[in-house]
Length: 115
Image (cartoon, rainbow, N blue to C red; front, side, top):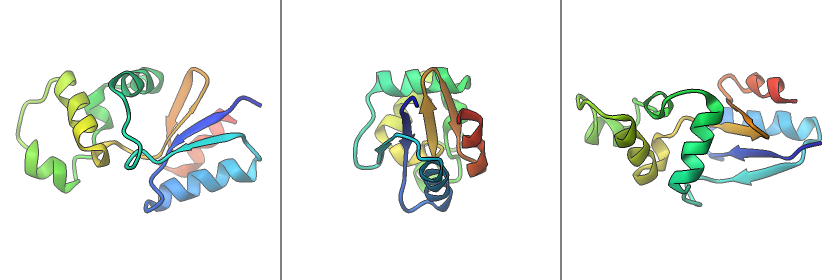
């Protein structure tokens, strides 16, 4: 079975639930705690391409970092990408990647599409 990569936040219940589903299916998993291990710009761009969305669609707009720094501003796609690099907490989570496909684990059952 091809390896899965999960961008994981252990403090997030949806992220924990998504990881548990992968473990239940005995998937080979690389866990990346993106709040501890900074993502490179190229990694983030590649992930966004696999998700098939824009960088701005991946931002959690309710986070205090967004509200305090970006709310009400007209952000370009590049601005959104840089915001997630500077403030990784802004990135929607969890993200699971398998090969050329990726999903956001909201709800956690979305990961079943990759199994």
